[in-house]
Length: 271
Ligand SMILES: NC(=O)c1ccc[n+]([C@@H]2O[C@H](COP(=O)([O-])OP(=O)(O)OC[C@H]3O[C@@H](n4cnc5c(N)ncnc54)[C@H](O)[C@@H]3O)[C@@H](O)[C@H]2O)c1
Image 1 (tube, rainbow, N blue to C red):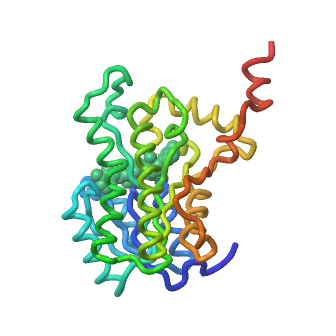
Image 2: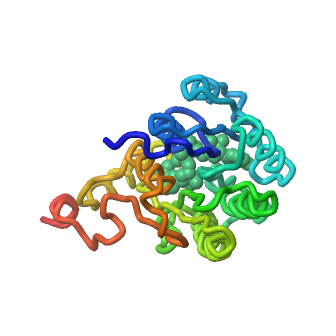
């Protein structure tokens, strides 16, 4: 493993809820690679307490912030800048939630107030984090901003419900803000489209376990774990990917380009 890929870099990591979270793994890897960062999550997630253990392991602090609130994000950036002693080199947006998915509403019976909530939490919060970063001029040149997506942004997956549109918006924001921020300050903005992963957000989806196994059989390399995703995130925060921006990058063991796999033929189609 390379060492100190993020030496001297400072940033913000959102979305670490428990050790299964992609953001939790990303924080551990960022620490291992020499970064200094602040952790944040929604105030309600703070009550579960686990994030404080992560903060101790990473020699950092937790600043509560609801990512749908402009005021909370402003406060988060101000306090993080003070703690870190300067501007940021990276931001991880690892936030997703759909009340419709959580409460099992089908795609033909969506509650539209909840749809707004899904989009606000899972996608518009990404725009807010970028816009406030720009207004406060809080990112250093060649900074890197990454959000996490899923292939339901491009293809239909019945169980993913209104999160499909949320991810499509998220990826679109990466393209449009990537263009803007690249010109303004050489900041890059990308999304990583990750395999199904056994986390709180992932497992909240109806039929998740069955689909997890299917995707694993379809992918020549198998499903990518949260830890592998964290390693990919670190490369995107590092100086080795400075010319990558406005992309949606599949991190899925090859799933996105597989038509069918022999394993699936043997399991389901051979008589
Ligand atoms: N698990 C999967 O199968 C999978 C696959 C592809 C992409 N993703 C994406 O990865 C990201 C991280 O999810 P995860 O799988 O690690 O699950 P997770 O449940 O561990 O993380 C989701 C996080 O979002 C936070 N959050 C929710 N509402 C918030 C708000 N208003 N403000 C701030 N934070 C808020 C939660 O507290 C939680 O920490 C999400 O964007 C998710 O959609 C997950």
